[in-house]
Amino acid sequence: MESMVQVTNAVFLLNITTVGDRACMDASILVVVDIPEGITSIGKSSFNCCSSLKEIKFPKSLRSIGGASFCDCSGLEEVNLLHTNVHKLGESAFYNCTSLREMKIPDSLQTFNDDYGGVFEDCSKLVPSNIYVNNPCDSEAVVAYLRSIQ
Ligand SMILES: *[C@@H]1O[C@H](CO)[C@@H](O)[C@H](O)[C@H]1NC(C)=O
Image 1 (cartoon, protein in one colour):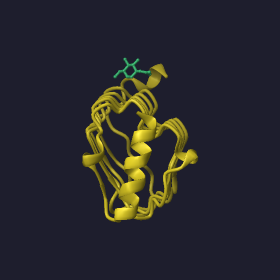
Image 2: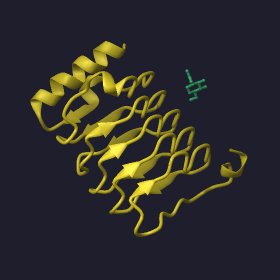
Image 3: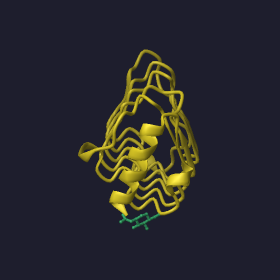
Image 4: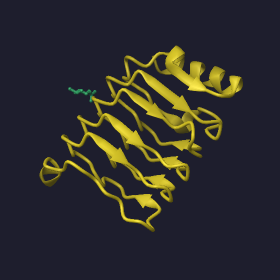
């Protein structure tokens, strides 16, 4: 969307629980996003192609991250979900995040299976040793998953 190209800051209203689908799509100069407490889901393609996005603060309340939500965020280097309650990462959620090298995944995200297709596909800098999980069982699943998409 042309209109998103100038956006430098995104402020979310209190009392909303969802970041809408495509909310900040193509906001290519947006650098930092602070998603407030109370948000439980991030919609599809919400930050798709935010190529300058460097830092996202996720709230504890977060439970799901929608498909392609951070797809093509080529400036994103680290994502920390450890303190969240995320149990679902949508298809291609972090697809083609070419700078993403560190990912922290909470226990609430139980399994990686077919539902999580392409979540980290084409994240060429993300190697299993840079994926942190608390639970060793999850760790095995993460590694198996990453192998399966290479
Ligand atoms: C991946 O992102 C880069 C920009 O970082 C872009 O040039 C390229 O076309 C994208 N690849 C795919 C398969 O979408």
